[in-house]
Length: 150
Image (cartoon, rainbow, N blue to C red; front, top):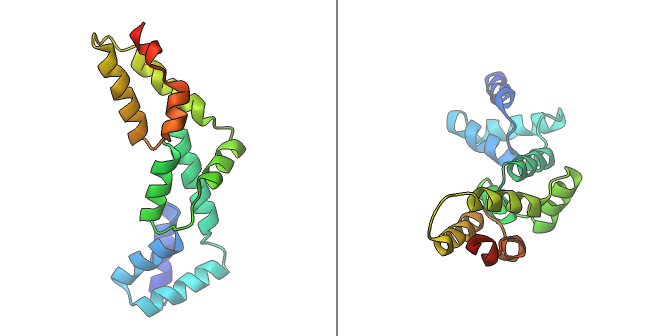
């Protein structure tokens, strides 16, 4: 049990993990029963806090320029099933992150490119933002075809 706890502390010293991630990682090296016991101990000592990990992840990804869909999809892959767009918007508001402003900054980055086929550039910009996880209605509010055809 002591070795399992030491291993968990070493993992947590590098970065924050979700409870499910710790269980999965520890179970590969030790028994599943030991991993559950250690996770209970870590929760008791308040070393694991899934809400804090999710909030920090959402904030980091928003600041990095990713949209709601990308963030919720990545969290789903990590085992967080109940993430909502409202929660992501709340985190953005609390941290002073304006999602539409992020879209606008990407638009300006693309408009400045010296490409002759402006229609193609417009479509590439839309695809880029869609692939970053932004909702199409948010993209259309900011990225206008006329801006690219000037």
